[in-house]
Amino acid sequence: MYLNKGDYDRAIADYTQAIRLDPNYAGAYNSRGIAYANKGDNDRAIADYTQAIRLNPNLATAYIGRGRAYANKGDNDRAIADLTQAIRLDPNDAFAYFVRGNAYLGKNDYDRALADYNQAIRLDPNFADTYVNRGHVYYSKGDYDRAMADFTQAIRLNPNDAIAYNNRGYTYFIKRDYDRAIADYNEAIRLDPNDAIAYNNRGNAYRSKGDNDLAIANYNEAIKLNPNNAIGYFNRGLAYNNKGDYDRAIADFNQAIRLDPNFAMAYNNRGYTYFMKRDYDRAIADYEVALRIDPSNTRAKNNLEEAKRARGW
Image 1 (tube, rainbow, N blue to C red):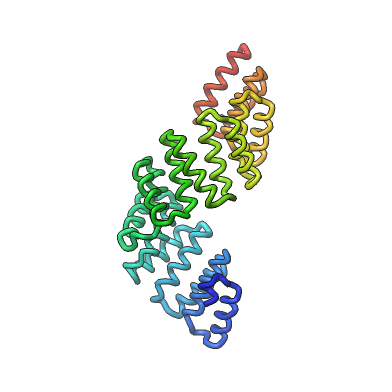
Image 2 (spheres, helix red, strand yellow; image 1 turned 180 degrees about the vertical axis):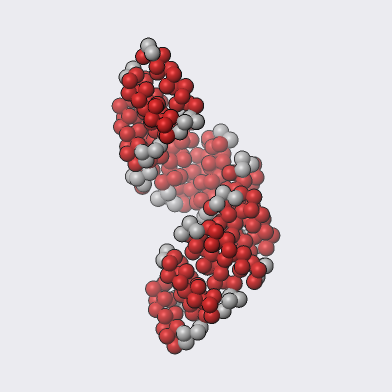
């Protein structure tokens, strides 16, 4: 009861007492593992799921739970092994396919992820999260129309899914339908006002429409919510650059570089800003750093050549 109500501490206390009374009760270990997982304590969750599996090697839900916990820790190979075993034990468990799909997605194995999400949807066509994640796979494969269809279906099934709106908005953005992108970001922010990513994305859409002031307002909010994300400062620097406010642009690129010293595009764009201020030596220095970090950065390479010509080299 406590587990279903989200009172995980009391649930853990009850399952611990159940285990004291019956140390061979696999279900108690499994349920306590679920409670630990919901608290974000993946290590204790894994320990409990492992004990549940020792006591009952045919307990598919324990393999699913342990697989999820491994995936949360970034150990996708172990996650896949556990979820594959869960599917062997119960081939009709849609959630097992969904979670294994997530692990494949974590490995950027889009084809296997897609196959698992397809099977999860066949078994349970009403689980919105599967459409969100399959949409992410389609997006990653460059199939924006199918991605859009999946995000839209996720929203139909769960109109309060902020992530689905944000993802669909980003897909509209890629298709340069900025007004629809902004409408989706608006809804994502209404549903989750603390989502820094949605503010950042809406800022990008406004900047792409040429409204740099609204873009900056959104980047300000994104930075307030997540002051350690270099992308927010980088994007605000681009907007300041567009307004010709080069000193503020440089200050933002500086901060982006402090937070992420390997951010090649931040060096490139700071170099471009120095170039616009006719500080060619600093521009050249930044372009050279950008190319050391990312030798394939053709924009930085072209900018470097232009700066050297301007310098008279």
